[in-house]
Amino acid sequence: MTPAALVLLSFLRMDAHTGRVLERQWRDGRAVDSGSLAKPFIALAYAQSHQFRYPEIMCARCWLPRGHGKIGIREAIAQSCNTYFDALRAALGPGELDAVARRFGLRGAGKARPEELLGAYIELSRRAGEPGVDDILEGMRLAARSGTAKRLARDALAKTGTAPCTHVPKAPGDGFVVVLYPAVQPRVALLVRLHGRPGSYAAAEAARLLQ
Image (cartoon, rainbow, N blue to C red; front, side, top):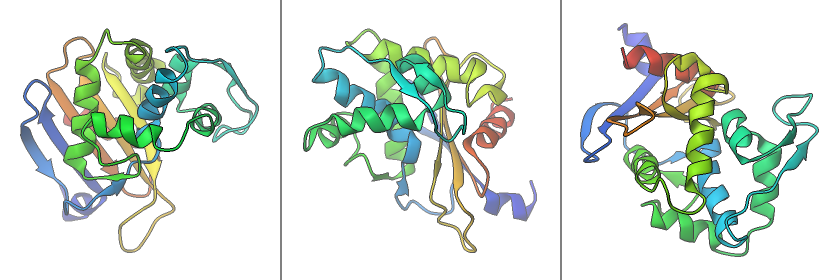
């Protein structure tokens, strides 16, 4: 790997069973903006105050200009639909989202250190079978199959995101992906950040790192 690539690519690999850090290539341990990686926790915060039922919402315009059409939770996770999660977040009461985030080891739904963010996803996968969780995990599996993380090209749980760039010089945004592999009883958890490219490109880098 070239020195230039070391600057452009950051990643953290953890044991999905124990949470132990296996490999780290991250320039610093500062908190990063969770961006769209907060969406599963927004969904859970909504679900717990709505009898664990997720709505269907019409998305006419999103990061995808033509919109996603009528969309439910699984597809919304897979396609990272901003319209869907903006609607869910608007329905939350004060403090509801932060309370859910803290249950997963986050200090809030805004910024988190890489280990905290990846650890929250490991904890999410461990809660399979709990109310509201399985739909989210299935959405993450769809993301890896045919959604925003399809460049992984493997059966995994994945969630992509784009967040403000913290590099110098700055880019419009940095792409992120969280991957739990394999999808059933994950052994490895991976967080990848790619400077100046969307989360779908970070998924392609994650695929290379999982080889």
